[in-house]
Length: 176
Length: 121
Image 1 (cartoon, rainbow over the protein chains, first blue to last red):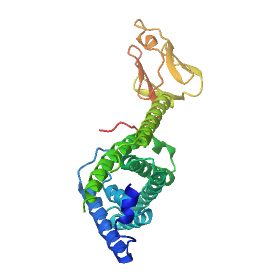
Image 2 (image 1 turned 30 degrees about the vertical axis):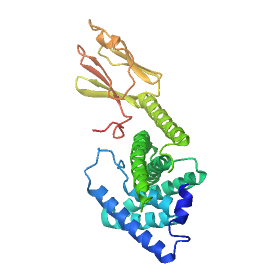
Image 3 (image 1 turned 180 degrees about the vertical axis):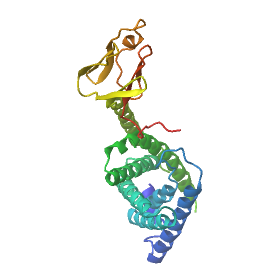
Image 4 (image 1 turned 180 degrees about the horizontal axis):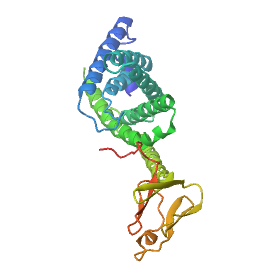
């Protein structure tokens, strides 16, 4: 049902300029979310645990446009927010997490078995897993994996929250 | 409108939770043997550090005999009246101690989870 909708979204094929405008708009939205998250005092003392509200935009782009656009948005967001807030290593971590998470989300969406909550839970967990793998590679110490259960559970919980938000947002996007 | 939660979602989430629980259980179990060595202190001075991986028996010369066996350490015998240290039994987890007050002997398990504690404030 939702796939037919997104095809009809631009009254037939989405024009190139409309696509670019949409990606630009969503990228800036994702950037704002990254910024809000960077200044949000949501920090429970474990590095890597965060809400991932920028993922809302990515998931919606994945549903409403396509995987390619979601990838563009994610890459641009990661580089710009990396240069603005976190530095080169931050980009490296985000890149690993973002690419793995988007890859899995796109693959799971293709199966057409999952709702947006399942997709975003998988995305959240994979994002954390990607970052953990990068950290393990950089530090060259498997002991990093003691964080794994913590990051897994935080990924599940944040993924559910993000999924519910996406669901609600897309419900209203339907009326636009 | 598509459904908010489907069967596959629940399976996925349950699967991930099981993964997380298994991971935590694995960590808790490995952390139990994470103690790497027993540090023996006599009268405030370090007497010696013995890796838990090697079985051995050490006579401290104070009347206390310390044994390391199968990854844990225990006070085999003591000449004091209380015998509290002997009754303490085997210890293997980091931070655990056996104390023999009359002879001022302290056995501490070292190493392991330092700095990698999963519990956070």
